[in-house]
Length: 190
Image (tube, rainbow, N blue to C red; front, side, top):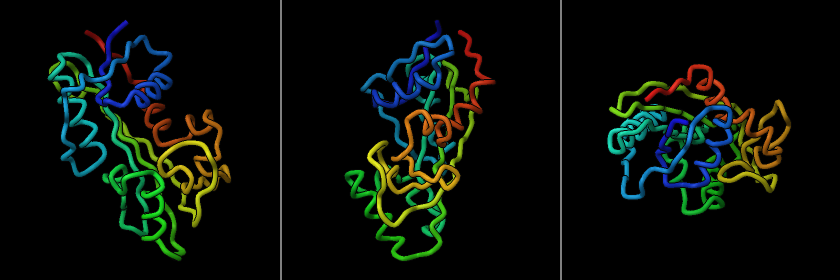
């Protein structure tokens, strides 16, 4: 079993990645807490690559990182790279997006997830991006999920991410699509 350092301090993200990588012979571990990576990229792919590369170099192990967020067309792609910092809590972030959209009819949006895997020397070995198109509702719906899930509506399934079963969200989400693109090419060697 090969070790793969997840470039996050969030145990929930590690658990989520374990679900996507369950069929791979990998042992996932959180990055050491003393390693802090500043996200200075201008795209999700740049930030994922930056985090994976720096964690790989600092640990001497293979590392995986993701960067993801919500991009609302009528808000010129906001909150985008700042999705997790668009408010102090999930309800505040949701309310800010709803306030900024107001009664705008144009409510198309997409969730984006970029993944990067770096070799122990820091070189990016794999990169991919998954996108899930949808639209922003005027009021939250559903109790599941987290973040912007209650206002992100996927027309094809006539549900918000917060209304979907975890299995369906796992499969069709931006993260699910990014891992689906990554898995066929994933071969990590020591």
